[in-house]
Image (cartoon, rainbow, N blue to C red; front, side, top):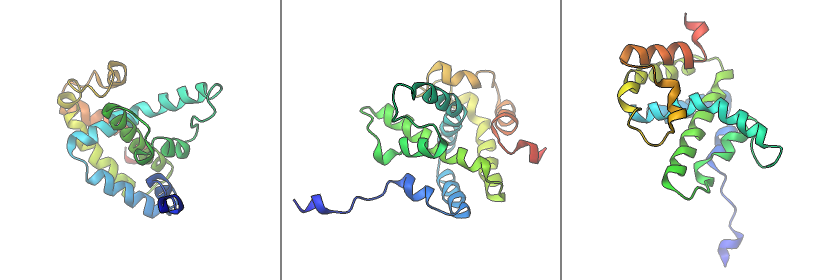
Length: 171
């Protein structure tokens, strides 16, 4: 009964979104730092598929007003702590899209720490050609963006020149 009067704990997304820009980037960097190489690849797949997902949600918003249309709303919507997914696959996908949303929000923030995050992801791109094809978390349509990657150099190139939002600064 006393549980009814407990203060509701904020979701991780609310905590992230309330941070200053430098604290936010540092927290996201810490999340990425802690990922194993295969996890970084899952993050890259979610990141690549984030814009099409947001566009689809904007179209569906006409029928379902609860769908997010901004990156901040998407971060809250995909929050793993607030997940309503029934399946393990659904929870994992939401978590990767949540992390991709956190990363996408950094695109507007031009900092050296952002560059460090992308350098890690570029290096992980070397393993896309071995990790992604057998993976069943993502549909063939979601993996299609990466289907031309046949070796380590292709993977690094794709992440550094196609996905990396700061590529113009680094050329």
